[in-house]
Length: 129
Image (cartoon, rainbow, N blue to C red):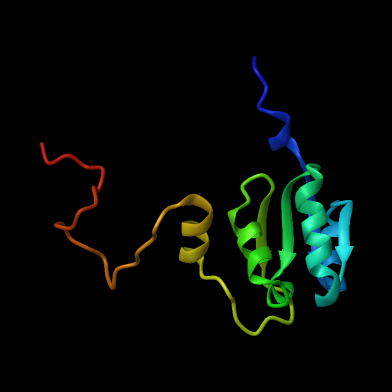
């Protein structure tokens, strides 16, 4: 049996407010970082470049304080995959599910107004025989 490349086997890091980090810490994630908006950019870039992590989970509130170039670097990263999750204090989600799927998977999700009864460009998986 062949193994996947070791770069995909990285650890998980969580960066965010105390409440967010504490929850992941209780779940067993060891590499957790409580940071404010001021230190978030430096911490995230260090984690990204360390080569130690396969997944970096970041509180959505910290995203607002990052520079455009840092956001682009984090958004385009595949290993480690960087995801922004709503924090307990988030008022609204900054990235919709369809935007996340497009960014991470390269898939554009479109939701129609109702159930389609035939037609359309999609396949239902049934053959009309």
